[in-house]
Length: 250
Image (cartoon, rainbow, N blue to C red):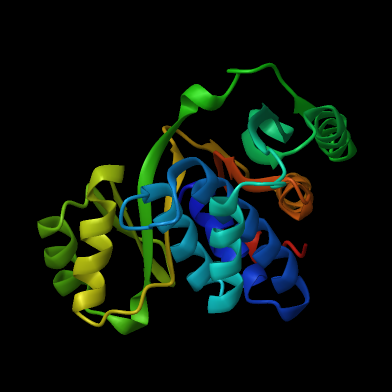
C-alpha cells in the first residue's frame, strides 16, 4: 500500500471533521480563485477550475461559496497574487516529502515550513531533491463494501485505468491524467460510490516504515504541514503496514 494511499485516506477523514471544515474550504477557495484568475470562470473551458470545483464539492463546500470564489478570481481587481511553491525534503528513514503551497509571501512561508520540518526531526531539502520520485496520476478510491471487485475491474480498465488494487477498506484506482475525467464518469454512471477522486502525485517507489515511533513522527509532520494555511497538498512515499498504522494516534 503506497504512502500516498495511507495519507489520502487520513486526509479524507480529517476533511469530514466539522472543526476543520472551515480551513479545508478556505484552502479550496484559494485554489478556485487562482484557477479562475488564470484560466477564466468557465469550468467547461478551464480544466484546473473544474478540478478545483470538484474538490470543493467533495468537501461539501456550499455552492454559493464556490461561486463567490470563482467570481472573485475572474473579477481580477484587488485579488491577492498567489504563487505556487514546492517544498521538498526528507523525514525519518529517508522518506521523501513534497508539499505544494499557494502563498502570497514566500519569504514568510519558507521559514515557517522549514520550522515544521525541523520540529519533527525532518529536513527541508533543495529544489528538485525528491520531486523526480513523484508523477502526476488520476487517483480514485471506491469502498470495497459497495461493489464487486470483478465488476469494478471491468469498468475501470475499459475506461482507461492503469491499475486497481485492494488496499483494505478501499479499491485504489490509478490512471493517466488524460483518462481521469472519463474514468470518474464511467464509475459515476454505474452509481458506484466514490470515496476520493483527485489528480494527485504518486511515488514511483515506497520506503517501508516498520515501527510505531517512526510512523508517528512522519504522520505528525504530514499533519502539521497539512494544517498550514498556505499548504494545499502534501505527498510522501512511506509504506506503513496496517498493524502499525492502527497503533498510531495523531
